[in-house]
Image 1 (cartoon, rainbow, N blue to C red):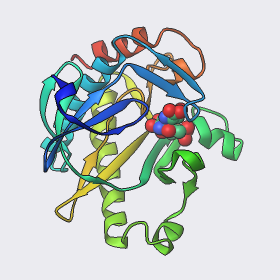
Image 2 (cartoon, rainbow, N blue to C red):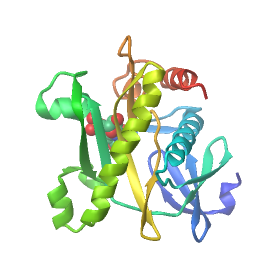
Image 3 (tube, protein in one colour):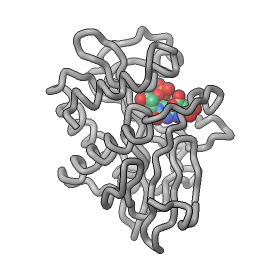
Image 4 (cartoon, rainbow, N blue to C red):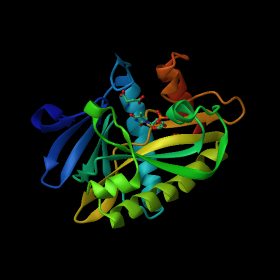
Length: 235
Ligand code: TMP
Ligand code: ASP
């Protein structure tokens, strides 16, 4: 993909968004990896390609189950064409097992199964460090209409069932993950990515991480673990 001929609309920590047409963009997955709001950063050759592969695989699966996604078509190893949605400035986090900031915030042990999945929201704002925000505050700040917020929650929990049951067959636990959504023509679309950068995946037998915690916590080689995840889901 000759991205240098396209207009760069946005560059984030792990992706670049190029304008393809008035209603389509090209999403390019970079090899850059960051943690702790960019305090720790590196470039790891091959990461972008793996995350693009996993994202397009999951987005196709989710679309087939009736949830609209921004994914349109694959372009090459590192990029795909997507609908030019207007991103809702919220990160939706779904938790099935205790881990990460949840354990830190509430002083809870890691790895406890949560009986009913928890949906949390963070304001998508790097300068503020993506603070957690509750539904009432979202509504009172008029970030999102109630109807849309309900749809985000409905889709997030439906996606949880789709991904958890698929991964369970591969002997992988979907611990928690982050989703982003966008609006196009007044309709909600799943956007951004679903990859080992944005999810926690644990081997069911060993509880070993097959995700970015390997990098966050210096627990091994990121590409080895991401490739192991790819191998386990057969893509
Ligand atoms: P947390 O436990 O740090 O709050 O993370 C919950 C999930 O969200 C975890 O699967 C990693 C993902 N995540 C992101 O995708 N981006 C982020 O900036 C953060 C903090 C977490
Ligand atoms: N995505 C965030 C960062 O780039 C945090 C994280 O994933 O741990 O710093």
